[in-house]
Image: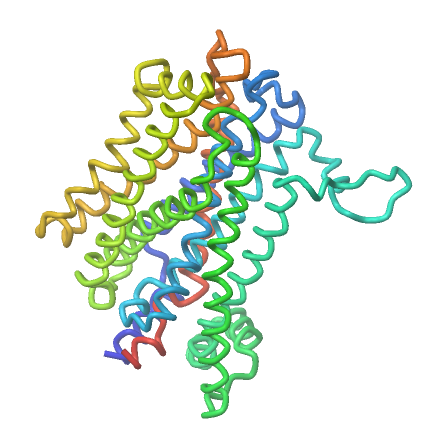
Length: 427
């Protein structure tokens, strides 16, 4: 089994690119070109291209930012928790989940920078001595976001590199490409596989995994503080931290399911990614869906019991008003659709898993849309008379980040082993 997996890994890394890979690269480049044009329009014409207003100052850009951050925080958390719990099926999903984290953070970091408007003055936000005496506001959750997400990004990269060290050391002498041989030699950090190195390797891995698991809870809680510390209807809520953490895990496992199905179908990894992995991921998705239903119900009950009239107005807008269609479609995708996993034949079916997981990704995006746009639409003066209109530029930016994600993931497949070789041997 080990030799077969090793040979398949070498074929994936050095074999002739398959048709699906080339098509994916072309599609991702087209998406990125569309996103680049949207960036040009945003910088040249200003944020007026986004369809923002004085009341709705956070548009689709922040919706997408929170959505990408949720996906990013789930990947390393999934891998870290499964490592700490000694789950053997981790070896099939950890590499893809960790890569998902790094790529999604890159996609998420793009939005706050472009949302500044005058991107060329972004360095003003850095806390460095200057004659203008302009300093960032350390009391702002947006600043907490930067430090929290940057810290998580660094830890995620270290965790990802840590997991690949033994594999890179083994593959560096078996590949023909001088670039990959040199790259693997550099990243393997003089790994020789001695008993002492293995002992320190496992000890360090558990330390980083524990740190990453804690960071996920703290980081996505801090992201929720962007909303919770304000007094806007629908944002000022104590449930937001745990609500955002569970939502991140929920959407993260859904994306991991789609990525694993892709690897299994197109890279001939059916033996490494079996029914057990699909079933276990779907079980976690089902649990998270049930938890999300409790959060939604709690939010509705707390809103109607609130003495703040604008909280009730916002809820009515979601239940029977302008956003009711979006709200009920979100409930269907996030709550009702995953309940099909109670059926034994569906929970192990790859095709149904992809459909339900794709629906969850859309549903979680709609949830972010309701949180950002729906609450900003309801001000202290009541519901705004004009609705928020999504602009083509905002859509282009989102498509561009999807292109970045696809491109970087496809490059990851060709540059690094997607299945952990040494963990499969100890399985």
